[in-house]
Image (tube, rainbow, N blue to C red; front, side, top):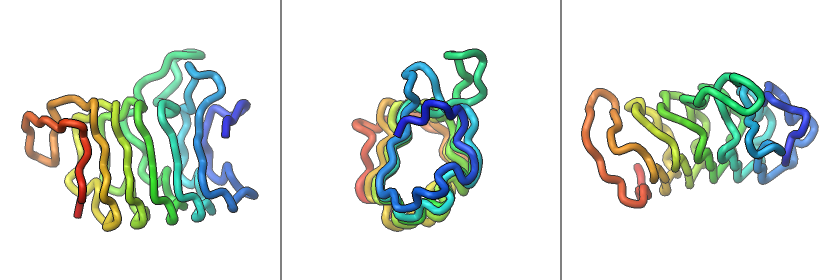
Length: 164
């Protein structure tokens, strides 16, 4: 799905198409990104099993094709995706994962956060994700703070199986 006239992923954006089971959001102009991410954007999309947001999210727009890095996925942005099993949010300039980012995603099995530059992951960032068995963090920076502990880490291909 390319949303040509949409720069923001706002609350209730997908009202009326609740039967979707797979959604790939890419901006039609490869250099442009969605720069407003509101809680409730995916309200009612509990049938979505796979969501791809690769290289499509950004922080504040500086001009037509220049953006601040996203930093983190806003808490509440993914609410409504209770049936989600696969999520890919690679290449989005993420550097933190906050507690609550993935709340209500208890069925999520595969999470791809590769090609981001994490410096901080909250200690409970993945709490409640009992079904998660693949977590991709490859191409990440080698210095990451996990809670209050900082260490040099080699993640290899970034795949952790199983988690939890």
